[in-house]
Each structure stands twice: as C-alpha cells, then as structure tokens.
Length: 53
Image 1 (cartoon, rainbow, N blue to C red):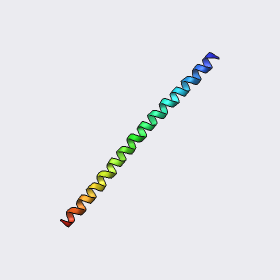
Image 2: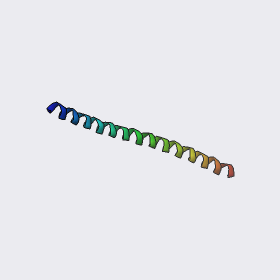
Image 3: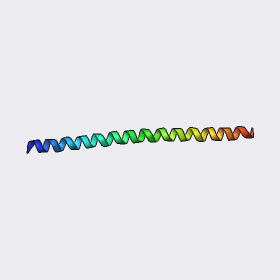
Image 4: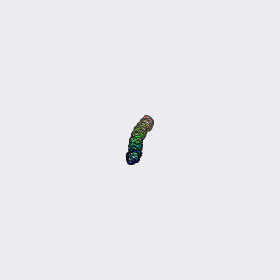
C-alpha cells in the first residue's frame, strides 16, 4: 500500500514538473516567434517609409 501511494505521488510530481517545463518551453518559443514577427514588420515599415523619403 505504501509503495502504491509513493508511486502515485511521484507520478503526480513528475506530471506537474513536466507540465511546468512544457509551458516554459511553449512561452519561450512563442516569445521568439513574436519577436521575429515584430522585427519583420518593423523592417517592412522602415523600408516602406524609406521608399517615400
């Protein structure tokens, strides 16, 4: 009985840690993508303004 409870708690902890790491990686990737999109838009706007200047 004790071992069963122990393994249950361990699996819960591992699942939680996995979820946290997954969210961290996801938010990191999302911020990278947003930064890249932002830079692309910025360059487009810059070249657009320069073409009129």
